[in-house]
Length: 259
Length: 323
Ligand SMILES: Cc1cc2nc3c(=O)[nH]c(=O)nc-3n(C[C@H](O)[C@H](O)[C@H](O)COP(=O)(O)OP(=O)(O)OC[C@H]3O[C@@H](n4cnc5c(N)ncnc54)[C@H](O)[C@@H]3O)c2cc1C
Ligand SMILES: Cc1cc2nc3c(=O)[nH]c(=O)nc-3n(C[C@H](O)[C@H](O)[C@H](O)COP(=O)(O)OP(=O)(O)OC[C@H]3O[C@@H](n4cnc5c(N)ncnc54)[C@H](O)[C@@H]3O)c2cc1C
Image (cartoon, rainbow over all chains, first blue to last red; front, top):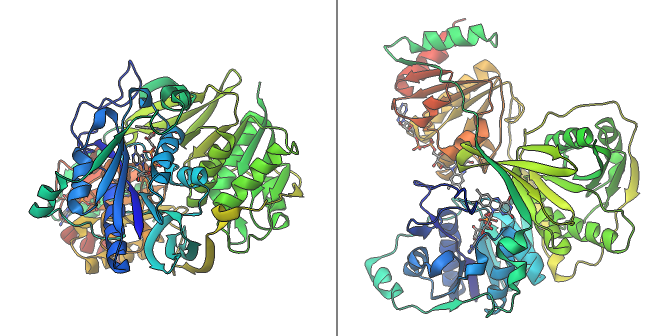
């Protein structure tokens, strides 16, 4: 079984950076890491391939400047190989442009299953998985909290507002996984060493057969007209508990007439 | 001057229309002359409620026989546009829900139109619709509009607008034909499960009592449930403890959980990560209990208690019980 996992490499959310007022894109001069949202997809893929008894996990990542540090983490976890798409003309890509690029790179791998996160930690449009599936003409199950493969069918527990749905989906398919579905493994020392020599194919937009006019800023057809600080809440009353703080809470609730 | 026409994707929740859909209708009606609804299932079941909230027509697919809505609804809308059955609207607005995202994502490919996501406000700038999207955990607001002549697709976050009954007549119901979906429509729902819940719904409750990792252990979450019961509140949680399996996902408040705007939000043992804050900082009053005076939750709290939840909560529960 061949599983392709989409992995986004992002600036460390602990240090989220800022929007460049000139280019209106995220300033990315910091080292990139594997998006935590995608560590679950990588782990899930490794487990499914393990359960299947054979197969491999291939990664696909679109990123500026051929950055690989996040990709190496996923390779160190156990993925076999990766496709990396970097191109000047991809700067400013929206989710649809990103999906067009990823879909081309995925199709070249002829996977049985495509995994992704439900939403990335930095852009969180949450639309890329469905867009990839539509571009590839594949079925998709988003918000998976459990996946098992039986023959050529994926059985998925799909999170809903009220609980979950059991969904059956013929392969090949795109499945997006929620956080917490599996416990991502830490790369072992051996894994980290091995990752250094794993094949990473670097591709440009042209090599994928896409028109630069359809991706990047040119393709996004959105215009940011204003960036402003959000109004902040006024600071409230902060007290240290001296054993009677609960009384202040009760009084506060009384003032609000909610008791 | 308003827009001519807006389309809204509506979702059902049990026998009613989901609140997110009614919220979007309220805004759509404010900015456009005509508002039409697209949905799966039986349109007749919802025509009255949708009409009451300002929709004139409901295009409904009928029973999807287990198919997920994403491919089915997107294909039906795109097919209607292709065949010339529909006049293009100025915008298509959906809710940031599981199915809303699926429909928006697939439709954006079919129409080759981008999606503006995580929108919390919509306004007219001339005849262009502009969406406000909070970024960096809500510290910054970005306003975006489309520059193409394609249908503008927006995904709106729950609780961004207030639903409003305007006493409109029952909406006309029209069939929305779903074309052959091919492989893309292969996913089928075989069974559905709902978590048992008592008390008010998390996203509708006047008071929400939420717990986080600072509660220490799963058993201690019973204090949250107890306090919620006394106050007639809904219990909520952070992703940290949902992921740890203390409580089901339906409790989660935040970016990937529910958005709540109660009169009072009590955060107990919650640090106040940006992804949690976006789900609750619209609450009218926020009370936070945290032992770390530097916890970011205090920045949004109206009443902040620097203290140990294991000391404050039991006394609070007792005091309220004794009233
Ligand atoms: C603050 C902010 C707001 C934005 N708002 C919008 C908007 O409203 N509309 C819009 O179209 N674009 C928007 N963008 C741009 C968008 O985030 C990027 O185009 C991004 O490359 C793809 O979208 P995402 O990260 O939101 O994907 P999501 O759909 O949230 O990601 C889901 C999954 O798709 C996969 N994936 C996504 N990107 C990549 C990648 N580059 N490489 C490999 N796998 C990937 C991952 O598995 C990920 O977990 C925004 C960006 C930022 C920083
Ligand atoms: C893409 C993405 C989406 C996310 N979506 C969500 C979401 O929807 N909702 C969400 O909640 N999170 C979400 N998160 C996770 C979020 O970033 C935080 O990790 C999470 O909210 C932290 O939960 P917490 O406050 O319970 O835990 P922690 O951050 O560990 O905080 C625990 C707090 O408890 C305090 N504490 C400890 N012991 C005591 C005590 N005895 N008494 C009083 N206080 C005590 C500590 O001082 C600390 O502040 C998301 C993250 C990502 C990357």
